[in-house]
Amino acid sequence: MAEIQTTIAPHTQAPYVQRTYPATADLDAAIACAAQAQKPWAQVPLESRIQIGRRFIEEFKKLGEDVATELTAQMGRPITQSPGEIRGLVERATYMLDIAPQALADVSLTDTDKPGFRRFIRRVPIGVVLIVAPWNFPYLTAINALLPALLAGNTVLLKPSPQTPLTAERLADAFTAAGLPENVLTVLHLTPELTKRAVQDPRVQFVSFTGSVQGGRAVEQAAVAAQGFKGVALELGGKDPAYVREDADLEYTVGELVDGAFFNSGQSCCSIERIYVHEKVYDEFVKRFVEITKTYRLGDPTDPNTNLGPVVSVASAERVRRQVTDAVEKGAQVLIEEELFVAAKP
Image (cartoon, rainbow, N blue to C red):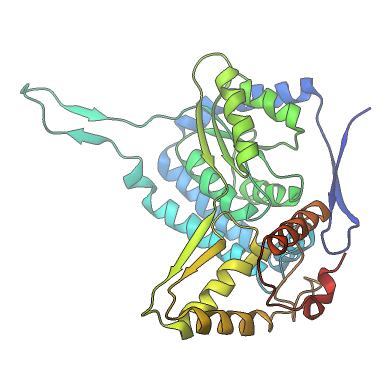
């Protein structure tokens, strides 16, 4: 019996969407189709690939507010903030399309000492690229790898997070409407075991992974254990600090750091996780930080008045609670009354 992937909406804890995992034979067939489609796609002139990319942007725009609404339902970001990621995708995609001719052009080597010879570096497609995208910024992180891979003449297997499966499907729909040939982009919903199988398949020449350190380590280990040498790109979690100098403009700084800490409920590789403040401005900084934080409204992310949504899962919420408890037990001071954020209580 086929395994089912179920996405739980963070704010309702109800099933939102389900997808069926493929059998190993179906996964192998999808990889074979991508490998077969790669050579014809590589022969398509770069300018034609760029035109498909520009049509993709227009088709993606046609999806309208539904994309942002779906995103909020899948991962819990406040509905007023989700459109920002959609705009970011359009901006990044446009930029990458604009620079593609220069980025993919031959590089002439002028330091030769042999007259009559022309030396240059030519960039050629890698082949089949597996992209494993996360749930916290699923559109931005996916397009960062997806569009360059396609423009360079590769075919792509796109595996979205099980938390945000519809995002990859929407990208694929827009590319199909833009005229992308069949099997050049394939969306795969995979278990960890099937993902490992795809990583280790010799027909997959490159893997791009964005996500947790634990997940990145698993991808790297699978790639190393595979036959031959496989390119791997890892964009993993961070532990980002901020330092506030004594001459900082607190009117500007405090608001920016509150937003940096709490945007997307702190679920970002670049979210602020610790702040070092110069002793001369420490008390005033903390006072202002607390004041701004108390104005945040935690609640239903589909409510336009909400600016702080839920974390992605019950397990994530429990982990945060354990971290707070541990910090307080070790001497941390509580400055925000729990009663101000009733929705955070278990």
